[in-house]
Length: 383
Image (cartoon, rainbow, N blue to C red; front, top):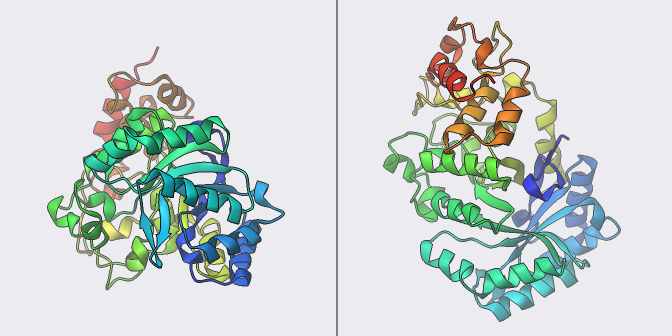
């Protein structure tokens, strides 16, 4: 397992985390077996949005004696009513459900208190101008939650939250198909990839701006829906007409700016082990370039997807890294100092580019790499 720093929280987190939804309906023994497998594979991040009492109880039992070995992302505003999960903005219901979470997990703190599921302007105002955010801030002041987060599927709303300065962690839905959906796509249409038609089969700029904003401000992204609920893993259900593997989906997410943890829903210990195989696959096996190739239903051109399929470079430039820093810099009025420092720390930069063009025929996305190198030279002027 490899680890990243969860943005400005400073927490050291596993690149792969457990998505909690699949704990629903499991027995205590089954839940414990999954947590055992997670620990065995070095996974230390678990998302818990589920309000169902048995699910919380079983997970609490599984964590006993090792709570400090895991970082828990627990949600505010999820309740269980009339035999089903629902989202609420009622403060008293929110307080009761969160206290219930603490008690059933046998803990007195949650590492990331995640304000649950904000996708609309109206809901954003309700939460950020109302008592829910104040309650989250109060919990943080008392140390009951260590950091405030928010979950969303809407890049515009997510960006507003990032720019507000109040959240440290953003739980956001990312995969290759979602990144090509129109920014204003409703969640029900998003899940069926209908927004790809609205977006004109091109990478959505709002999402790219969001990822860059998270990277530069230190707001960490934890990824949900990385596998598209499994639809991306089969050619007949994938909108690309080509199947991806679990490692390829994980790699795609980890290549996005701001991403620190990819949450994988696992129903069995074997599925945890399957996710852990990511680290035993080669770069070639992790490559997702084939879904945008000429033989698939969709061909993406013009935007660097940071896959490094363009390598090798005779000047030993990490082209994906240079382009990432270029994208981060161009989304700001001035180049952030941290971005420039990371760029300068590269063993080779755009200044070393030979302009030979050997990389460009290898790029599956038709990126004008030499033009990107020119822009990087201009924006990161030697001092």
